[in-house]
Image 1 (cartoon, rainbow, N blue to C red):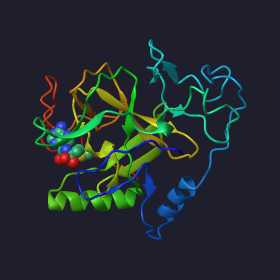
Image 2 (cartoon, rainbow, N blue to C red; image 1 turned 135 degrees about the horizontal axis):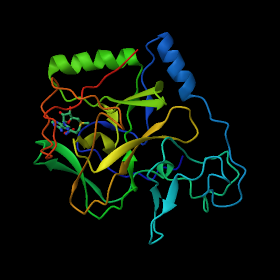
Image 3 (tube, helix red, strand yellow; image 1 turned 180 degrees about the vertical axis):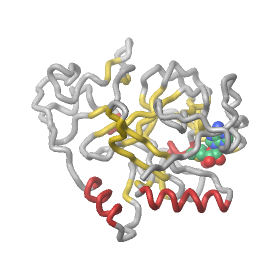
Image 4 (cartoon, rainbow, N blue to C red; image 1 turned 30 degrees about the vertical axis):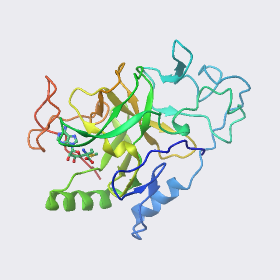
Length: 264
Ligand SMILES: C[S@@+](CC[C@H](N)C(=O)[O-])C[C@H]1O[C@@H](n2cnc3c(N)ncnc32)[C@H](O)[C@@H]1O
């Protein structure tokens, strides 16, 4: 994938362009994760058009052009997203179903957030609703490893970067993706949680069954505004009242950050 990402880490961490597999802990769960990570989705389209309509392209219909035609935006009801990829017959230059695979948007800044008292991410230009911000990239973890790291974070009182994305069909949980950018990550690791966020996350698949965690603008965002999303994810939020104190200062702040819940 030709990622266009030249952001730099302010910390001495390994900057990665997309999520990578955790180290092999020789577990069965790791083997399953590695199998998925090394699999290719054989779902190529045969289009010779722009892949804009889902009736024509089997993956299409998730994105539409902004009114000025300058960029692709995620449509409101698009979840989960499947993008066209290298095996597809469509042309990379005309296909309108390739966005996340091109890397994060330009003009993001890592800064010292006065609201959160730690680092955050803001934009130096206006961002339209539906625009792609960046992937939340880090190490892909088994649930066992994620629980182990959460306990260590808790004991050390360190920041928690583990993010869990649950995907459902109707009420049934289908797939769980766990990403930890604490030591290997990209700019997404600096985005803070808010109870009234201006961004949201979405599962985006390209050529792998494991989705990327895409962060998109939930509304028009003016330049200089800090970017944030809800760590509880899309519609998966359980109200907690024993988590870490939330500093988001939103009028509807629940007072607590959502707990990272990892089922079996
Ligand atoms: C993914 S990191 C976000 C970037 C982080 N601020 C930094 O400096 O690296 C998540 C950590 O940021 C802090 N954080 C993020 N959102 C917060 C919030 N709403 N309230 C309090 N702390 C928050 C917590 O320490 C949390 O464990």
